[in-house]
Amino acid sequence: MNNFSDKKIVDSWRKNATPWATAIRNNEIESRSLVTNDSVINAIVKKAPKSVLDIGCGEGWLVRELEARGIRSTGIDVTNELIEHARNSGDGSFQVLSYEEISPNTIQDKFDAIVCNFSLLGNESVNLVFHQIASLLNDSGVFIIQTIHPISACGEEMYEDGWRKGSWAGFSDEFTDPAPWYFRTVDSWKDLFLNNNLSLIEIIEPLNRKTKEYVSIIFTAVKYS
Image 1 (tube, rainbow, N blue to C red):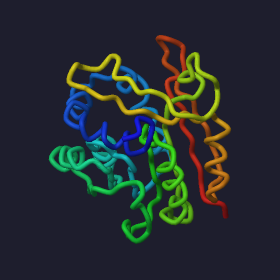
Image 2 (image 1 turned 30 degrees about the horizontal axis):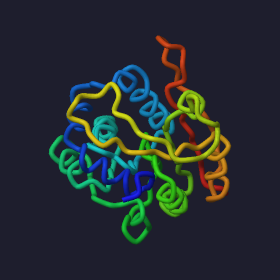
Image 3 (image 1 turned 180 degrees about the vertical axis):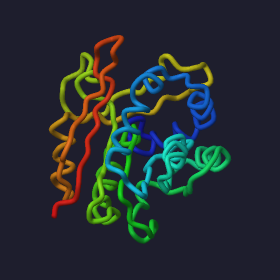
């Protein structure tokens, strides 16, 4: 298997499904508990959606948080083990579905909001997701992405699109075989929206108040009218 590919990402997450679910349940990821969890929830809630689709939902924490706020939420993920954790942990509807399978044929509903929270890590698969978003949104719906901030994540590499090695640094020893991820510049993210009938209406850059560094970037878009 190619070590820098969408398939390798899926393979890694299948291997690490259980330790990931444990890490989320035990709040082991500081940046999430301090900044990014609340950031994405706030970005969603302020749009007042009645229905949400969480693409790449993992073990379902965001779906449960939204359900607790009275927002009907559905989560999809390619990893069977993560979906089992999600179904066994609380409210919400969950479905095993790969990004390549996403379409109006496999997802019957349309949604007021579609959310990808640190779940767009690949290359071709991300392009496929973007291609389907407009067809799955209600006319006034929003598409919200929280992802790694390109500036803080660039490190010493060139600021250009391309595959990067993954790492489980800071995680427990239960994690193995880290997934690679595809780096995109801010302009490349903007082009994905522009080329898929989506118009950016807001960009938020959550900041870690302790380190004064960008933790993530949140894009919000709507369909072109």
